[in-house]
Length: 297
Ligand SMILES: NC(=O)C1=CN([C@@H]2O[C@H](COP(=O)(O)OP(=O)(O)OC[C@H]3O[C@@H](n4cnc5c(N)ncnc54)[C@H](OP(=O)(O)O)[C@@H]3O)[C@@H](O)[C@H]2O)C=CC1
Ligand SMILES: Nc1nc(=O)c2c([nH]1)NC[C@@H]1CN(c3ccc(C(=O)N[C@@H](CCC(=O)O)C(=O)O)cc3)C=[N+]21
Image 1: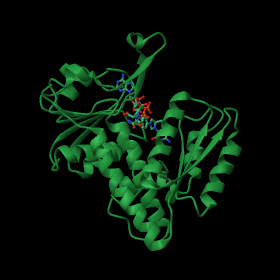
Image 2: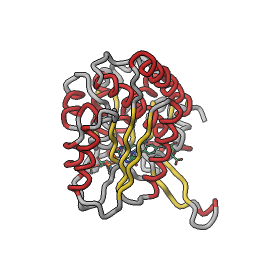
Image 3: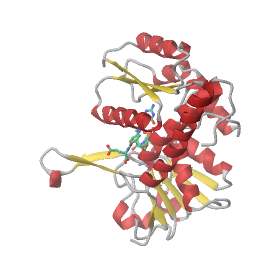
Image 4: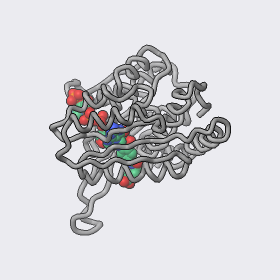
């Protein structure tokens, strides 16, 4: 495999180590323990795994973890009331409502209700607008994690052609904003893009955030390109036993890694950075709520 493996374990350990130092300093100097409230509505097994990994990361860095599990049948009013209660709770630094939420609840109503200062997902329109305007914002965790990995491989990204496949508010759009800020020439692709393969082959940086297993083929990858695979797809793995599954990304990893210059694996790539950057955002949120300057994390 000629490509360098961009190891999520390595990068996320670095981020968490910096966050742990910042948490310790905030406790020692200001008597503040940052706290992250995670709200899970329903019983989605994948969401439960993600919630558990966030709880573990909080313990590692010294952040207090608060979990709220609500039944699948929860009304929108009830969920919004909980969000407002967390907004008003001075002990809570960050709020994350796990998506997707059940159909009777509007995701946008939830996002709009979260206090922008506690919006560790960076999804509130105020934070999205601040990022787009080049102002201090809460930056969404997955995009920031992808950005740190790219910067780790190559510090100067200016002038590189970047293709971002996927235009969600959670991943694709903020990734594009961050790369634009790094002076990349950014193209955004989506389900209506014509000749995606040709767009991809021109890209020095290829970010896949689609949600389709092995969608990006090896012959789409420009030789030497930096490939960031955001996709988390669970597919059947009969080789592991009946009914078993495994995680794969949006990129056909094994052949693509023969062509790329550097590539992130799934699992073990961007997902680990998402959790680490969530810890980082919670620490930043705690500082801003206390009127303190942002920590160097
Ligand atoms: N690693 C991590 O930490 C995280 C991983 N994820 C994963 O990343 C992936 C994307 O997540 P998210 O952005 O929330 O997903 P969304 O479903 O919100 O967005 C998917 C995007 O992919 C585009 N798309 C779908 N099909 C095609 C196609 N055939 N060709 C080109 N583009 C296509 C869609 O286009 P259109 O807009 O036209 O419909 C859309 O913009 C998922 O696998 C998700 O599980 C998400 C968050 C964190
Ligand atoms: N409000 C909200 N914000 C999110 O950021 C959000 C969300 N809802 N809903 C679901 C998606 C998905 N997502 C993941 C984060 C980390 C891993 C992760 O830790 N992955 C590890 C381990 C996975 C495993 O092995 O089970 C890895 O890729 O190596 C996965 C997926 C965040 N999302």
